[in-house]
Image 1: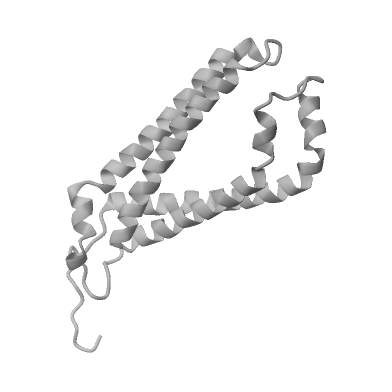
Image 2: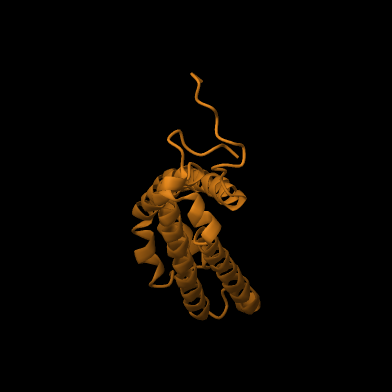
Length: 187
């Protein structure tokens, strides 16, 4: 390389936690962008039949009042999800390149998703409490607890990732003056 010695093998190495978080986030983001776009296409196909499908699934009863306003904005919600997960994917790519902005953005995304999981748990409780008595309440406590446990487990995992990204070794790896001009060594 024109007389420029390569950096030592142990210099500027990306922490293993950052590698795992970055690649996992990139894979999850790619999957969820694809899922949001597929859901959007399916919604556009099923939208005209949705009132009949929804009412038929409840045995002739009308859907609860809070369901119809949610269904009016499915397309916007799916577009928002695709945009959000595309941003998470970009943050994950920046994280793998040890860009300082990516660590901050990924921590913000983790906390936002953790808050979303807690909000989902609250909505989950409200939805199960308002379920009609004859519409699947036989195992309602099991489903209620399963949803709550899953929501809080995901929120806890996201909080742990945000904590790891705020640890001193990870912060040191993202320090601007710690990087050579050609970037970090690949792990």
